[in-house]
Length: 437
Image (cartoon, rainbow, N blue to C red):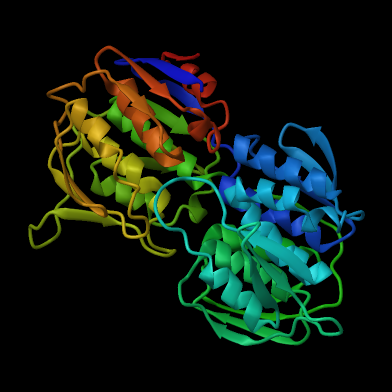
């Protein structure tokens, strides 16, 4: 298990560019299974989760060619159908959260797929009901295989997936993406209401359209898909990762530093810049870049009636839950108080005990809510030894350690590597002191 040794207290300066969006990459890379022709995808983040998904595809028989850093060509013309039904394949899928995205394409193209309970972050329950119920609406049947701890989804012999109207029980991003990929090859028209409309889903839909799919309502919560017989090859460029953009804003503010974040696709950041402004960050949009200025104090807003500011996650265009950990840790050195309300996952805030040990003033109200009372940079956090439980808590711990007095050690950084590419090298180029051990 690798560690980061972080010497805190160093200001950041310079320019940094976000990687490609991890969550989009997991979806669009899985979509290559829908066609036997070549699909070229650029700006792929070369992080652990994405590398593992690519290895999974190669094991399935997908031809993968790396043309350049972040630029890959995929060709799924020789899928080993016996292997994708094997216990070994199901076991590998169970270790990788992103593997859920191959279910829709496999079911649509080959008529069957195993759906194991997925791995990934330990942040609480992550239901898969939306995925499976959506596939069943399209005509798939399912059985539970206790030996593999997986659902077996299949289209009965002689039948095909058929388009249907469905109202999703939750606006699940991965659920919407999976159902969308299954429906593009289904017979007739599929309507998905209460669909997630995050930029990741919009990008997936645009790739599918480029491959020949017929999709209406992209960017809304009402998608209409008219099935086609087959899809063809296409090219696609992945958006910058909005979570990295927010992480860099938080790092700069926590360390009273000025940095420029390049090429952020500002129009796809939604409410994220405004939420950081509510925490007192006077960030500026400069073309498609964000400039975060150095400030003496970051004053948290109050609501108009004077009540405490609340930051809560919500379906797009609300605030992504993946940034609440970053905003929580940044608020430690703001002036004022804020309530962080993590609605989606009941275990994601449990890492705050490590921040309290470092000297943060945080009241954990329950598994979903924490109140942060800011130090206004009058007190430095103490260095500490921490273990990263998940990707977003890991980056929050790294931000805390970078601002702390002394040297901190963060172990289990493989969790951070799952979502952030070469983060130590990139931050060291801005002036951080991070050593990988």
